[in-house]
Length: 412
Image 1 (spheres, rainbow, N blue to C red):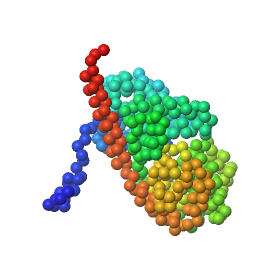
Image 2 (spheres, rainbow, N blue to C red):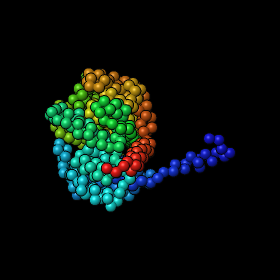
Image 3 (cartoon, rainbow, N blue to C red):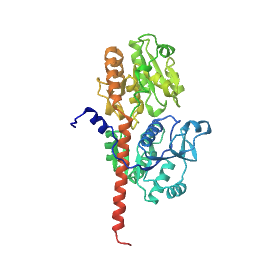
Image 4 (spheres, rainbow, N blue to C red):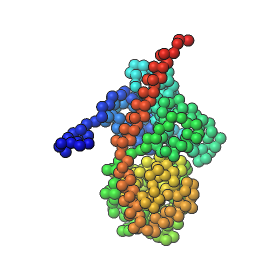
């Protein structure tokens, strides 16, 4: 745009685009201070919608009293429902069927759209209530529940679970998925109206500047000793045997190499028995978590069950060289040998080989880590929220057209 004065462009470009403020109901069965990808990313989206002047009503299960204060979300209308512990994840809560309460709530204060982040009992109730009131509905596909079957002996339930998820999401006006590859996978399985909305990363919180020599020394790493690490739940579906295999291969060439696990879960004792010299840092958050990322030289992420994998982008933002399988966020964002290393999905030998390659070349690691940081800095949460908002607006517009057409139909 041409202008007589350079400041004219700034004044015009800085004006926000005209936007109609909406009343949004967001339903989720996990939210901070619970620590998982769904909870943390939903909190960022809710905050972003609030900053964009929308009236957000957050509906979620009531968390234990010890965390209730920390869970409070300012400037958001929170509606708390009864919650029960999630099987296999006792520190998380799931909602209970609440259709009648939600119909009453939304009859008194009708939202423009209902967004459902999770497909549990509360999410299903929200879907039924919204359909009862003819409200537009959008949803997220955030967890590959059907992919967990082989890890938790649920093989016979895999097809029914997938069928339930398909039925759930196909009743929504739009379903958001975090990657194009997942969109294609779900489309083949009969899922409809899929929109790709990725995930952002806080590149100010996760920054190489948080690297601490003192922290590394507490792990037993001195000077240029190589530190490999993993951040996430220590659970069967995370495929952590590949991390142990890679670590043992690296130790042959670099006996002083260290392995750090950040997180907790049911496999902790088994992992400690198999790798007694590994460091188990437990669950971390905030600046402490950022320092743990920044202290790593190689971030190993072997999971094959992720829909995205927020830890991948957090590691990249922290200046870590990442080795992962070609799936989820890694498959979308990493160019092998440029800003990380990728192995063919499910090929553990390739994963181990990639780790050995990265471990043996410190100059390549530095270049890759710098490129990874640049990639992560482009993943702005403001852009993600705008895309999210666009999907909501599309669902509202389609619902309005549908209601208009229904009004033209003859009675009976």
